[in-house]
Length: 61
Image (cartoon, rainbow, N blue to C red; front, side, top):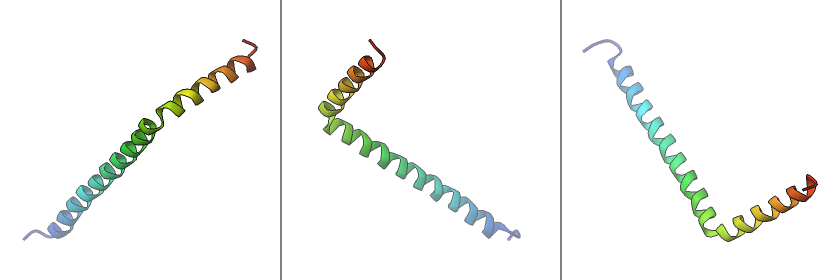
């Protein structure tokens, strides 16, 4: 048995679980945000339009 092999194995598994955790968190965030946008697409559309009109008037057309 090599010296340090337990540490290297632990480091490998730790890196694997860290990547798995990061991918899971990012997946959850993106799915959550897209679900909210999909549920309120009419609100996003109208609020975006209102923001456009306000900006247009604010910049003196």
